[in-house]
Length: 552
Image 1 (tube, rainbow, N blue to C red):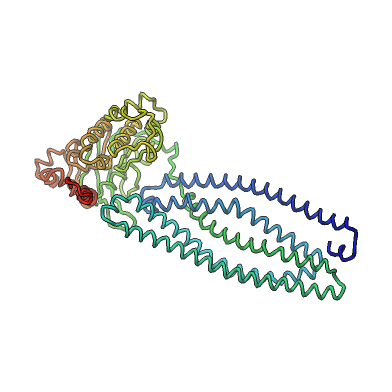
Image 2: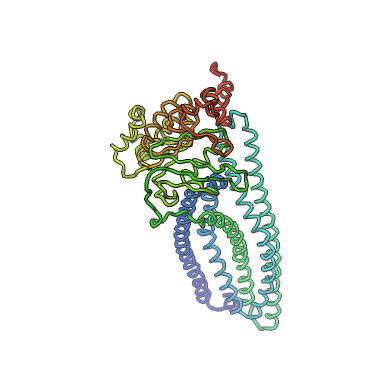
């Protein structure tokens, strides 16, 4: 176009060239939109599968692994990290592909104009390469540490929010806020460090652009003076090279985004690649009976001290065993091992002679003091235990655990929407819903880990009756929080320092003047202090005093 204008050519030739450029721009715009749509569909499909896989693996993680990772870190992976990877696939991917194609075609165009102008432009290539080689090894570790820091910040925030009642009771708001600020500051400083590196990279790129464009202009001037190329060719080569500024910068910037996405993808893949503890149909065995036997159980967490040492106990079909002991005695660990949720370091757990790992998981059910009410209709929440349960089955389960009174009082009965964002159930009601789920699931073995501890004294007796009804006829292991729970059991097992120190019926142990008898003589309150001092002692009075009530 420039050469035609300089030669005084007809206007039609100039307009024809302008029309070709405009048509190419329009076609490029349409194709860019189509490619973005296709890539977005592909990216969202891939990410949906990845997110589902991560959640699936997280839900099947062993309890010890999940506690070590932390719920906040998992939420950060499924939330923040998925967002970063989504942006990379939907936005960064198309931009990177477009930039690379532009660089290839524009470079070919420069050589098509004149090979000497093309070589002049290549003078800047080593400077770009050196800039990237300097930047990538330094920024990669920053991004990895940044994602970890964001996960730690999320974990700190979730932990503080979940324990807000305790934080307020002990006036720890300032300390927890300071902890969140520290984690946020660490993430911010890492982000600023990456930006400083990127700013230095941009300076190196600017120097490469200056050198490349200067080389083309000087070479073009010499070639035009020698009448080897036209002014139009030199101008086009300079404009081509100038047009490379944005694509080359985009490639480097997108690689920067890809590094951030790579760090997030590695965190997602780290969970998604975990082997799901599948129980193949071929391994599912039928037990010869319903007696639960724990033989020679020993366990420790990582390299810590022994938690359980040579614990052996057999619970006959329909028998109710209460496990008591001080905090740290190993009660919860024993319950988790009996339920098959925790693999012991040594020993075996069998139901009817079959290892629990080879059983249908529905044969053993564990209920802890931390129950969850899922958002939605109450009947749907209960049917989680048995999706094909009829309304009559649900009502029967609720009636068995003594809940129909307050269920009928709900605004819509069984169809009342419950959960955090709807009708909230009390702690005792939530526990009864969990016990009704247990009845619907109809397991052979029921394990209750302080399942009535959160109700408070007023609802304790009611929940104990509900638990007794829900587990009637089942092989049952109860981690006892109250003496009344132990009194209702057929047999009591006393743990101390991870070892079985006593076992027998409640009345027999009391008459024998055993260690358990001392707890019995000291009454309900003493068992509470002996078993769970950090969980139960002084919190009620402390909160009451802080509110200035007479009862406090």
